[in-house]
Length: 343
Image 1 (spheres, helix red, strand yellow):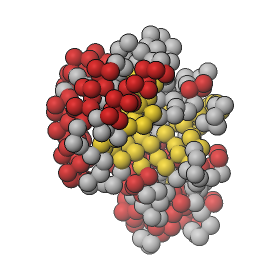
Image 2 (cartoon, rainbow, N blue to C red):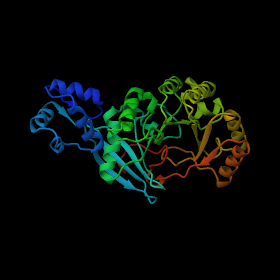
Image 3 (cartoon, rainbow, N blue to C red):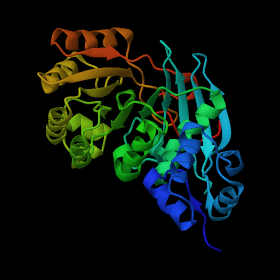
Image 4 (cartoon, helix red, strand yellow):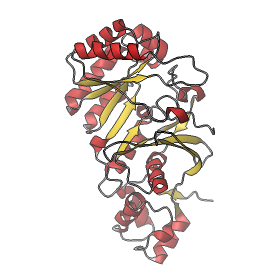
């Protein structure tokens, strides 16, 4: 039995090739593209401007990938977490964040699990199963838009997995997210978070995309960062900072540094001073994130006094800094809490 071609995740050019093989005019590709990504249709019989004959051909030779909603939870703050099952039975989590000023954000996954092994993150506990396909990445947005009957305005690639370890599929997904005939979400409304894969940061810089790059730093020196994040053994802070400077030079975009504050580990005034020195005279912004509780991990939140002092030290050193208001922690939907398990 010949496996059907999954249309979801295909570009217009790829759809044109498929349409030609079906003996149809190439302009049909744009129509299908619009049905998939703009109108969010996932059944061929709903593509009403296509002939019945073409719809039958498509149904016979192709398919539209689906995510099955297994479970959902809603936080007291309005955040919603969705557990989706993929077609091979693997599971991922996606988070919807209705925020202020009309923004409707979504935090999407790019891998099933994660291989990075950061010792404060729940996702890494399960290891890496596989990369998500382009269609599976984009489909998280489409499914949540269907569920909520709303238009997503902002996308954060900060769910399960390391986006830059799935570089090809992620970049293709970004094209579909940004395409004016597709999801039509501006690139400046996209944030991509990475734990610091230096070659891929440099590669991304050369794409000159106008997205926001967020670096998960979490420690201001190599000794501490290597304890928290094994990736630092491969790409130590000096190399990471050089790649970030290159990214800023190529894109003229500010880089965000994520810093999860952990009580008694990385939250001292000395750590803040080291961080300020590291980031001095660079086009950056620091997001301080009081650590989120994860079952099986022993880290704990810093005191409000420690958080305030850390921020004040960065302020005094002229480093732009904010304290992130974490959302969805009560349903394990905040940063570092995603595990793709049924609660």
